[in-house]
Image (cartoon, rainbow, N blue to C red; front, side):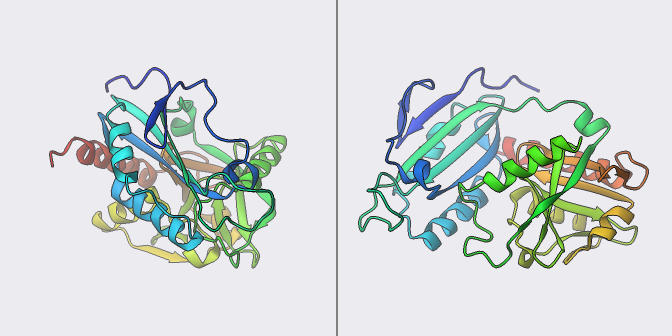
Length: 291
């Protein structure tokens, strides 16, 4: 595997900037109100994995929030991807731009686009070899929120959930929705293997439609594994034979304990390992395919 970028490279509205310099206005609504959306993507050799699906999800969010997407957005992303040698992470953020005090959006917004390309996070080897533990967060995801399904900048609940999980001695936070169904982790989708099928919470439970989630569903079905998207009760996670979390940068991470109790054998399961291998092969194949 080739080495990735050694340091972070930043573009603001298509212009390359020093990574340690000032980047946005103090009046930018993304900073003051969380008024914006983002995508976190993985890249290899200058190609972003499933960039079209990432951009489609972002543009859907922009449309719903009535933030105009700059015409050059796709080109800016393509230009930034050229800096992603080897393994890299790419963060694309679009805010409504600077605005006066108050919640009401400006009549003619001037969006701010920030793209940063940096090294892939160095996840501990134990994440994949031994698996993660989760704490059930005391807060709930609101499946009726106006921003449900949108990858907005408002991640403070996730931050609070991870802090609570760490105080409980766990690696991750697992959120339930207001009805008590399992929703997702702080920044990952949830899957459980019951022995007869693979299940993941349905989108109506307040779940973000993850790009890796979608890829895993495709890979599992291609291997003849039945996948259902449905409401999942917490007791089902505790009784599952296997469980794992999915996200763009961490990929597939085994989940082996919840609230201190083991899931299955308290070790990464066979299906998790098989899907992990298939997912890594998919990334390699799609990121090295010639147009």
